[in-house]
Image: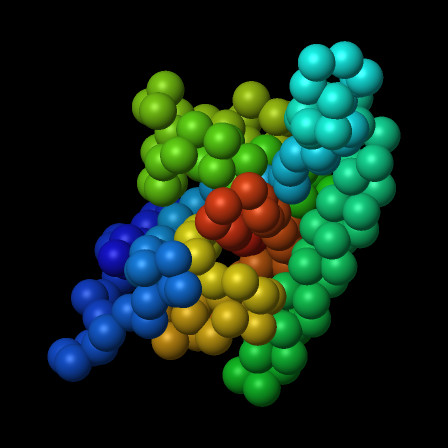
Length: 201
């Protein structure tokens, strides 16, 4: 499934004839969408030994263990993915005569929060369940330079999501738009993963 939106330019093209989306091992089909705003974060759960007693030897999930043990690893995984996507975007832009994009902390925050929202609330759209568009979410965060967004779900690596985006005309148009100067990347690994690219003027 693919959807595309750009500001102020219209909708993207359908997949080419004969195009088949690959299936993941769990049977779900990866989906991609291009639009204008987004966000993401990584969350997970840690299994820790249960206290001694009748259920000794069992495990339980604790939020404290999650925060204390996984947060640094998740932050590092997100930062690595952000760097990989930015590098791949800039390589593709260079091949097509566009200047490199710079990493944007505000756009990263926007993209991370939206990927997390899609993953934790189990939806996949450029418009969130409250009806907010990418530009609505950007304005709420004090971001005035949002130009476009790509979102995707199901691709396991930065290379896989970039390949999917570059093989979709609408997503590719965002990546290769020479008017953009900055990029925010978000990824939420809790089941998707859910990916967001937010492009800035």
